[in-house]
Image 1 (cartoon, rainbow, N blue to C red):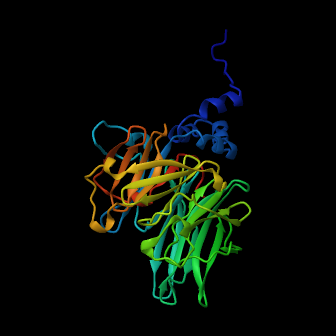
Image 2: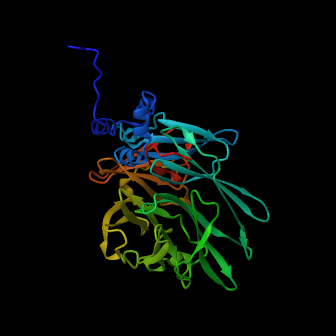
Length: 389
């Protein structure tokens, strides 16, 4: 028997064996031979691979000398520990970035980071794209200039990063309110990566209140905003009925208006929040300064599918959070679920404050760390081989 005979494995078998492997291992395997490099670089393989990987959190940390550290931490590592607090371990990947302003969003392993600069005449926004798993970063591929003022009122605008499944393209969406004479109009502009300009698109005509446009949420090839659209109410007398959800389909680039759950007529303390978690949309708000309520849209785009998911008493949360009288009760932002779905990770609207809440046994644990982590703008992240170019 010739023991030196080369054994050739079918491509289908190699594909099945290597798909579950982590990105770091696959990057090493690309160096083994040309056929493996071709397989691992194939766009279809890249798509299949990132759907099998565990979820992480991407966030920024304030550092000295105007540096910001971009970190990615496995969610599983945040679940470790049995005490009432958890110390944040060393992140799996990190970069230093002098000009990082905030994380705009994360799709398929790409993290979009925004940098802002301001002058008296305009504000300049630049965007770069990171893949922490492959340790690659794009140059500032996209820029945007906007007028910072509108009749002496601050211009209300935000950016959201999303993925259009129908065309396999990534898009940045600019959402703004602009004054037209005495009326405010909604403006949406879209930038498709690979193009060279921003495009205005027709938008649903909804009269919005200037001060209350929150960041968009990317989910199921759509971007959704929770906005206040009624003027005849005071900030201290807000109810759910004063808010509406606007969704932009990234494929058709059309807008629809959806009602939020008609859950109560009680006064809201602070503004409600939209979150995209585990392929579902969630709507949350403070209730009577005693509870935090979360609703789940079980079928995206169907307003009749809103179902109450959780009602959390503030007394069940830890009492050692740093608070100020103007922040009590603290504004909570759901960031993500644990891999088994039992635990929610929340950020608080103060630097370096986040905690775990197990909704099955009603317990909370504080996440502690040495750095000044900006949990409030953290985004879910999935490791992938997607290119930043």
